[in-house]
Figure 1 (cartoon, one colour):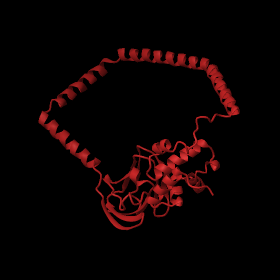
Figure 2 (figure 1 turned 90 degrees about the horizontal axis):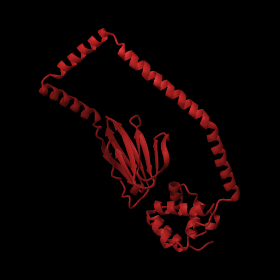
Figure 3 (figure 1 turned 135 degrees about the vertical axis):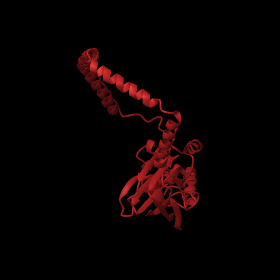
Length: 288
């Protein structure tokens, strides 16, 4: 068994302060548990490669609320670097051969492209020619009708400015009423550790998720049907229309990085995110 490194101790202490087990961390980061243990012990030999070592350490750190770049700088002597890793010669030769083949294909396709461009150019010139000819040969009767329609339009535009303002004001009020989302009444029913149950009452159930950092999210109904189960990264957002559901489970792997809105109203997490980074929120929806 490998003794804990200084970096491993730092990561493990941060995980335990947030009351997260290795199983919780595995579910959030999707990194195998044996690799998480290896990171804490500094046993990088079992990792797939140096790149994965640094990538896994970064995901571990962000999941427990630490700054990965600061850790890389502070514990640089413990973390393997990837600067000296090179692509195998065979892979380089395959890549060069692929680039050569792609260049040959481009050269072969060039004459066909030029011919196609010439045909399109001729077609455009002919279209403009016949279009101008059709306009010049327009019947006098059609010109008279168009002139009458223009005069009627001008007369309609001369209606009093006050009436026009009233119509614009009425139209604006209608648009504002249509765009205004229905308010949601949110009530916390119970909390138990990282799990909580809330009741939402409203005409619709629109849930918006926005992240300012990496976070694992999962959205599913009471029957287990998943609408989303994935990792979201910084400055991403997702919107779900769940009006037809009566129960919805939200699993937020990193509450400190995730904002939740229900019908446009910001949700205050039932449990303090500092106590539980991951939270499972069951929503009981009652449609008005």
